[in-house]
Length: 530
Image 1 (cartoon, rainbow, N blue to C red):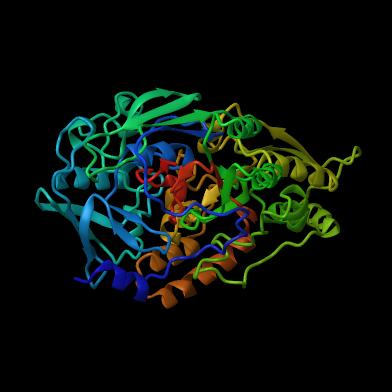
Image 2 (image 1 turned 120 degrees about the horizontal axis):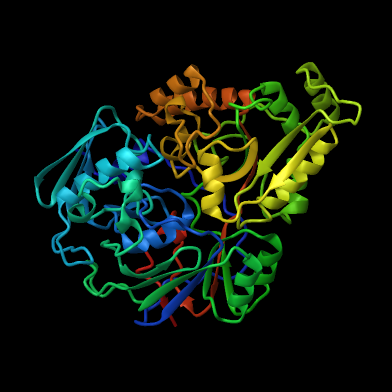
């Protein structure tokens, strides 16, 4: 057995996202003061609070306050104790031993044991849309109440990272192990019992989540805040006004360039782009390859050639974003420059459409498409969708931009594949095994958002990803990922647009805003007020 830090540095180098400028001074750790209510603004409505069966920021921000995980991470990608005070990865990468701290209890007072850890990990394996995250896990042994041994069929280089707060919430087996389908379990949103620093006291879908300090939290003296209120409003401008008036003290995942510039000039606010390295966010245009005409790769390429990524980054995003060209974020050690790119070329686009059999009719129209977008992030999503509509009109393709009432409505369209094209924001989640494989494996074509909802199938890609996922040697992994990236940028189930320029904006009275690699999807147990 070897301690993880050695493995991390010698075997598993994780991506560090290149830093964008920080527009105002950061608030570094200061002596905390107990008390106060932190009001957080969010544009994304969530369906429920159980991150074991649901991915996404809407669930993860409150979920990581309610549920603790085995480990947490600092801002240098180092694993830190959380529910597990010690851990060790076997030299062959096929087993991980977690030594749980004694005395930790759930919000109902029941002790947290290795049985809960085993139940949760197997529940995540069975239900989470990231099937590759726990895919190699065969079983979890529980030799005593405070020891859990995760056994895997193959070496699993991402298993330590998979123990993170947003990825591995530890559920109470005595509540969720009643045989009810976890995806629709009533305790996902009502009377939720977790083990994190805050307990749920109110959840009104589409409106707010209210969390209060859990006084028996296993980290003595924490959390410092009395309460967290997450106010949900799809209109980011309303949230901005609330922040400026002091009604809201924090907005994570801010991306609007106009608002970011305005926040940066406000002397009462702090703005930082730290805390999103683990997410590895990409903004992209997804194609439903199971529907005509999107099933034709030449149609997909023709669409890509109508899009000027530099215009999007500079004009639509105010220079805050950077163009993206592949499925792995550019700052990852597994990203490669040798991918297929599609520079703006309207003439070539028209030629490809002609050759594919979609010649313009008497009215100049070739065919009609719909384009959806993830609600709540207009500049990154809606505005780009409108730009794509305008560009495609230039080559004879009529596009209807479809709005969804909220995130659940959009997610249902994606899950049921009721779309032609859709803008989307999808994350690498630190390691390709966790955040990249799920989008391209044919075995992950499932009726769940943020799986392979493009219905993309290529046996060679399946083989490349499955092989890379079982290798500990990063050099060998990179070779497989290089081939994978070349193939998917050629076959184009997705056209990559830009890196998502996430920022956290907060009132200067708020101390210790989370800036670890997981940022706002980390426990807020160290956040306090001046």
